[in-house]
Amino acid sequence: MNEKQNIGTFFDGIAATYDPLNHLLSLNEDRRWRKVAVKGMQPSNHVLDVAIGTADLTLALLKHHKANRITGIDLSTEMMAIGKTKVEQHHWSDRVSFMQASALDMPFESHTFDAVTCSYGVRNFSDLDKGLREMYRVLKPNGELMILEFSYPSNRLMAWCYDLYFSHVMPFVGRVLSRNRTAYNYLNHSVKHFIWGEQMCQHLRDAGFNQVQAQTLSFGITTIYRATKVLPSTSVKNN
Image (tube, rainbow, N blue to C red):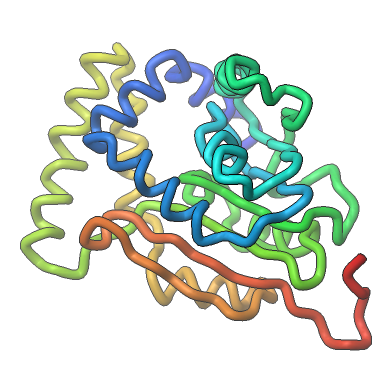
């Protein structure tokens, strides 16, 4: 899928049903996953939320006092429109800004953000390593990266059940409720063909990150990746 031409349009097409279907298909576990991911972060002044979408992670960051202000980028204007409404309903509009931009070519100077987050977005990058390098670039020295993404259970029985659910149940329910024949087939495909665990950790190290850790949740259905940007003492100092 060509990122600039298709990803934004693709998510525009399912924006209206994205939140309720996510909660339904995850049995509301997605709320808990975000809560765990956010609570493990250090409080930061300015956070970049990559692939902000409908702003669920942004709202969790603000709710748990992990950010003073947040800049969110996404390619889908419709997803962000829903996110803006949710932020307004919580009276946090003065602390959140939305921008249509690519994670592969961010319109920010290097060493801009105290923390960078991404919730269920990196598997949609057309070039994962380029996106990770951009996250590293815009993060301040000693800044924190947190990525929340789907993964696969290590237990064979759980993996079989998970694959059955993702391959048949989720696409069927998603197709019926969203009336989109291809959307949830694509989401299933994007999870099954993405990397996770140590392989993802190595890509983070290759992008320059240090102190890389992976924490699995719900039998490995999803994984929280945490990392830090540590520069040599001769490099740009944190300000």
